[in-house]
Amino acid sequence: MEALFSYGTLQQKQVQLDTFGRLLEGQSDTLLGYQVGEIEITDAKVIASSGKTHHPILKYTGNEQDEVTGTVFLISATELSQADTYEVDAYTRVSASLKSGNTCWIYAATEKGKEKEKEKNND
Image 1 (cartoon, rainbow, N blue to C red):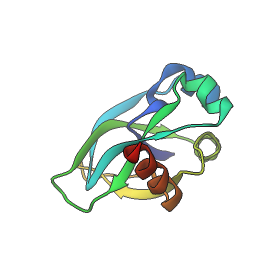
Image 2: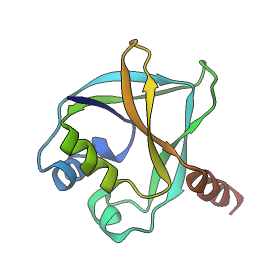
Image 3: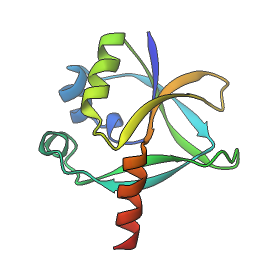
Image 4: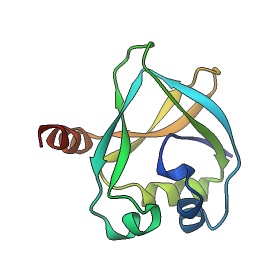
């Protein structure tokens, strides 16, 4: 099983049903060294699933004081690939450590995601 940390729309029931075909069960945990920003989503399928045109996005700071709370889901490798498909190209999947000491996958901002987040803040 793969551990996936969710801090945003993958915690929503409809997104889980649309992405994985089932509801996920998870455990609360905290990601260190990141802050949450926001980006605009333009992918119609993702908007239809989440019901939102703006999604949270993780930005790496490296500062252990920066914390993001969320949920860790244990999913199959196939489901992890399905999550990769759900996330738009502003996100990249990377390995990260949690406050609990466990390691998991997260979706954080790519360079494109950082640019989109900056554009939003300049509006």
